[in-house]
Structures are given as C-alpha cells and as structure tokens.
Image (tube, rainbow, N blue to C red; front, side):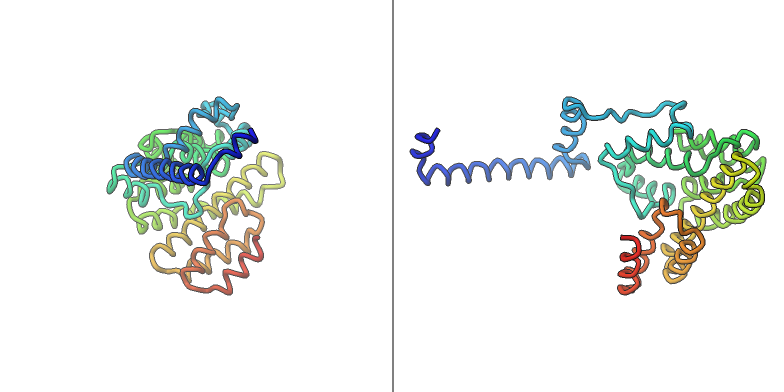
Length: 286
C-alpha cells in the first residue's frame, strides 16, 4: 500500500477531485429533477424505504383499529420518532389551507405519516374512556379513527344533531371549512360548547378516575379551541389580538406545553417585529 501511494502523482489527485466533483454534480442534478417531478428526495426515499429495513430499522406500519385506542396511544407515539416527520408548528387548517394547496397544485401536502400523527393526537386529546356513555361523544370517538375525510365530516354532523358537541365543531372547523373565516365561526361555536363541558367536569373531577379522565379531555379540548382561535385571528390580520390570546392561554394553562403554543406565539411576535419579547419567550422555553 505504501509503495502504491508513493507512486501516485499530483495529476492523480487532480483527476480524482474532478471525477468526484462531476459525479456529485450529476447526482445533484438528478436529485433536483426528481424533487421537481415527485416532490421528494430520491436518496432519502430509497434510504428510508429500502435500506433502513435491511439495516434493522423499525417498521412503522399503520396501526390497526384496535391499536389506535387510547390504551395504545403512548406506544404508538414512541415509534413516531423513528419516522422522518416533524410536527409543523404552523398546524395549517386541513380544509381551509391544505385542501387549497391540493386544488392549486394537484399534490397531497400531507404524507401518510402526517395523517398518522394527527390521528394519534386527535384520539389522545379529544377522547376518553367514558365517551361511550354519551351518544354524541361515542360517535366522535369513532369519527377520529375514520380515514375517509367525508366519513369524519358526516359523523360530526350526526353528532351535532344529538347534542352541542365541541369536538364535532372542531372537526368541521378543521376539515369542512374552506376559509379561515368559516373556521373561526365554527371554533367560536366549539368554544361555547367546550366551556360548558369544562365547567361541568371541573366540578366532578375529584369524584373518581373516570371523572378525572373526562376533565382532562375537556381541558385539552378547551385549550385546543382557544389556541386555534388565536391562530385564526393572526391569519385574519389581527396579530396583536392573537398574541394576547396566546399569552392569556399560556398563563391559564401553563402545564399544557404539548400544544406548542409558545411556537405560535413566537411566530406572531416575529411578525410584529417584537424581538425583545421573542427573546424573552425563547429564554423561558429553551
């Protein structure tokens, strides 16, 4: 080996550098063309789909209807980190924004893993073990597991025929509303129903484990609705109002960091160019 290396001339290293640069350039051009045509990286797709299973990667296949229950939500969530999917802090509205992207470009903006993540979140935050005792909540418990958007929307309308169901309004605001104005209107109706459920369950939360679970669910629903209303306000140009709503929500429920309200607050503060406030939020949630 040492004899071989000693016989190499500078021309060899120049040729090696030029050849590797040429190959890298061709790969880059091919990646650019593939991404423009299919909207994804060819190398990443091959490594995740083909090489990773050969190297012993975890198979994140779709959970069955049974494993999608609340009892298995934590185990399903642990496998999420194995996917190359990150939660979008913007959390765009599926009906008003993602569907508009589909209409304009003809492409699906949400991957299978994105849908899987949101389905797990919906079942974790918006359902509880006592839903079967209330007909409207029982319908919504099944609705969050539906993969067909139209089936979910139909189930939400069916639940509203039985009762003023906050989670049904949430689903319609997220998926049926085609504009942010329509979504905000539905979320305001959801807020009215959600506050009533929250007050009732708050009075009974210490009467047993079932009431405690129901109160935790009602709290999640209320926080989610208020956060989405703040995001609607921001997208409709009422940024200062959105900042106030987010700050009030973080003070009222300081422990519910899983909703990433601070990320939405940072975006709104950056839009207002309130950099000192941005620095304060970063220091608190670093």
